[in-house]
Amino acid sequence: MSDESIRVLLIEDNPGISRLVEFKLSHEKMKVVVADNGITGLAKAKELMPDLILLDVMLPGIGGFEVLQAIREDPQTKNLKVIMLTSKNREEDLQRGFSMGVIEYISKPFKLGELMMRINRALEK
Amino acid sequence: MFTGTESDAIRFVWIIASLLAILSLYLLFTSVIVRVASRYVERQKEKRKNLYYGFIIAYITGERNDTTKLEKKIKSEFDIDLFVEIIADMMSQLDGQEYPKLQALLVLPVVKTHFWDRLRSRIVNKQTEACLYYALILDVNDDERAYLRTYVKSNSALLAHSAASGLLSSNDPALRYEAVLNMARKKRISRLAMLEMLYKFHNTQVDQFEEEAEFLSELLTDTSIPGNNIGVVIRSIADIGYSQLVMVLYDFLESGYRADEDDVVDGLIYAMGRFQFGPAGDWMMKTTVTHPNARIRRATAHAFEIFNDTRYLPSLLILAHDSELTVRIRAIFAMVAMGPEGQAHLDELSEQTSDLQTLIRSIRNEMETA
Image 1: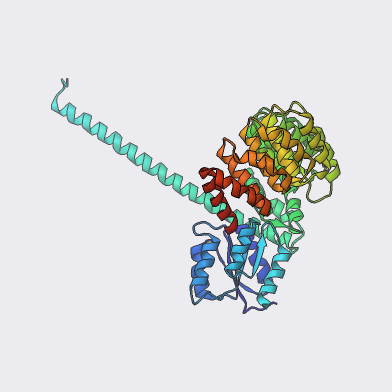
Image 2 (image 1 turned 90 degrees about the vertical axis):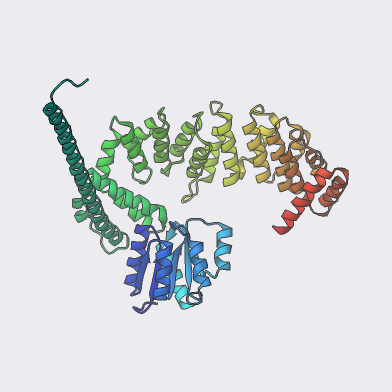
């Protein structure tokens, strides 16, 4: 799937990862917007209504799950597709994420190829 | 008492006021300079970061293969530290084919030469930084390794730990063993650091399970290693799953190897439970159920829970009456887990003591909710 009209919001505080993912997705002709914290991420989600959100669990200030909860509680954003990125591979995190409507989960350290595959799969859903 | 004229006094006040004004101006001026300078450094740092991110991303995604230009940009110690910091951070987040590419960038001649110099420095901080760098790369040569092997024996805990990390990145299990052995012999190493060493000792990329198990078996019999560290080694053996060592551990337990060291006994009981090694249960029924240390009795109850065999119920009944609350709780958990037979024993217990009745009820509720 590669289309300029596809918009991805990346909420991630690690500059290396956000730049790398942005680079890869831009090469797939997707439009990427990066937010390095949860509050900006939430605002961008409402403003852009992206086709997909890549959301890191560990964020400064409000964490990934709080951001996800706010997205789900807002009638405007509640149906947005979310993939969660986490450094924890804990079962309870997986359950919590899936119960909150996360469509894919990827644990850090992750393989870039796998992330791309999951992004494409999520966009096809 | 002031004895001069009035004009002298005025002059004196003027001098003091002028000095204060000069001092204030000086402070103001320097603070402005410091602020401007730090902003300049931050801007330079940001510029360098952007430059390095661009190169690194282009390199690991295959857009660029030539590193000559990049090497020319890395000129100072500041540049090298920033470059390595960025790569180390990305390595902690990425796996797959990008990882070895990041490692390849770390061994650019300009970077490697710099850390080789630091490794040979007489300053411990610089040696430590160099050791941490060697923990990130694979291409460590014999000369560099010789330094790491010396530093791992250092009295500086930080240097020794960093050198051990450097050795643990090797694919050679003998070198990794050397790192673990030296750290395990240290009396004041933290439990967490010891655990980290053991998990790094286990190679997750290449199957070296048998060789690793042999080295660990050797480690267990080293009497110069303090009991608390041996306890961590035994627990890690069980958690990582070196099942080929289960008989060795059982022999230790049965023969009373280091039986006066609670950490060792506790570790052995934990391992028996983790490996679900039934024969150890019989030995525990006779010995550790009445051990003077509550921690050992609690570990015994936990092991019985994992064995999940009703023949341990009589021992669990003893433990359910233990003087220590934590042991009683563990024993009740084990009995609840044992199904109807365990539950029947608990019903009897409930009728005997009101204290236990409350405890049993709350544990049952908790397990049902879980």
